[in-house]
Amino acid sequence: MNERDNGERIRREVMGDAFVDRALNNATEFSQPLQDFVNQNAWGSVWARDGLSRQTRSLITLATLTALKCPQELKGHVRGALNNGCTVEEIREALLHCAVYAGVPAAIDAFRAAQEVIDDYVPKA
Image (cartoon, rainbow, N blue to C red; front, side, top):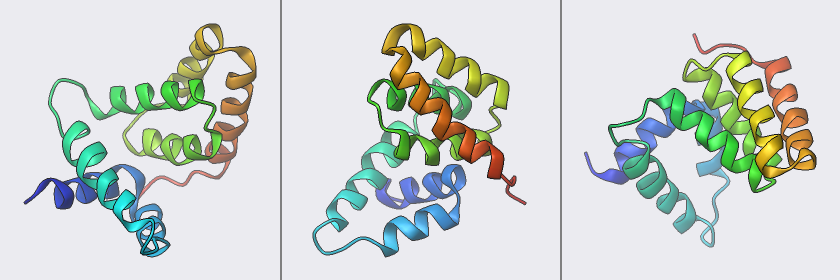
């Protein structure tokens, strides 16, 4: 299996089929290369590496998206973190930790985004 296909497999395991299907089906001729890049490089290369658990990778991703002030993207990754076995407490603590280093306003946005997902989260069957 090549990195792009393996990346899509990992992406589906973490983010869920509905999320990935929506991303791929909404891709246009213009944006399709970005989807291919994400599957191959983010998911097929970095997320596929040994050395960190998926839970740890999820928490790092949440911290990074908080620092970058990307609450919309953070929502998908909160769901992914829950799918990966992170607890609500671990997610809360990671976001609270970000308040110190990324700033309270960024953390407030992240908490709001995370709360929306947590309130509606239904574990994968």
